Amino acid sequence: MDLNYLYTRQQVSLFHADNAACDKSRRAHQSMADAYTALIAVAKNSVRARAW
Image (tube, rainbow, N blue to C red; front, side):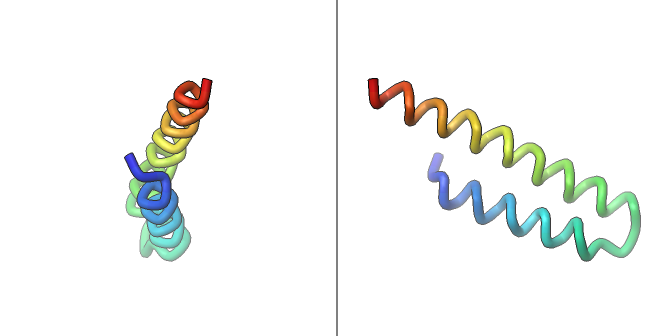
């Protein structure tokens, strides 16, 4: 998956979490940001593994 896409989605999710109207929305958006963070880590490790 494209890292730029993942970084963009992570930042959008963080923006929405910061500007959420209620705690439930804030937690949902933060959870999405956390999921994108995990996908970014997987993608970076995949890129490193291919470099070897």
